[in-house]
Image (cartoon, rainbow, N blue to C red; front, side, top):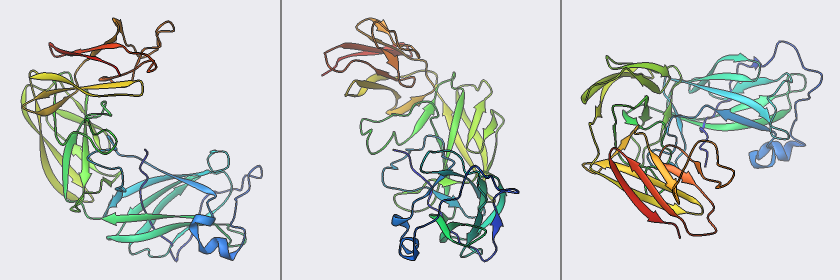
Length: 322
């Protein structure tokens, strides 16, 4: 499931979406005032918000992402009818610019800035008639803490429908580490701030919530985090080995595995997963249909039983598919 950011803003100051109208595309508008009054009846646009790394951490099934107060978020507008990016002229407004403001617009791309905690709507209207095209709700909340997370392994828990591993340590071969920004809610909401900065003696920032490791040694390392202007420091641990490898789940032609040390999930390992002796690769073997689904997962024909062996860090486990 993809988790979209919740954001709201209608501002008294409008911003034009394009310098020139694209005559080949018309901005869809709500059919009548009744539809315009109910956002569920007037869904013309996709508001494509940028997604955080390891987006399902820690248990995001029913928890929306927020914008960090004093942080920014990037939204791209697209037509729901054919998924193409919006090329027609539009006005973007917010109802409470003191809560959520529009920092910039470039074609279909809108940069939002959270000015205070709360809720607001982003509203898109026709610049000629003022008719409503669509609106999207958003939420803003204050940054509380940051947590290091995996970047390559999507499934890291046996409860794969509802959550992930609670904590991560990292193998020396780890290429990237994600940093999850959280508020103080229970359960916590993930926060987006595309202007966030990360610095470390052991890593280099490559995305607003991701660092690239510079061949770190085994042990503890620090990352300096600035989210919404709030500074903090977190630590991540690089471990030299794993205690065990175990099956996380085998379900509907997908099997995923985890490696652990002191009961903590080890991210960034190199895995070998074989189905009936055929090693899974990124491209499916036409004769076997076996393909990797992330470093620690494999997809296969789920209509028959298979023996699946996963190996990493000198440890392995073998399971038989249902």
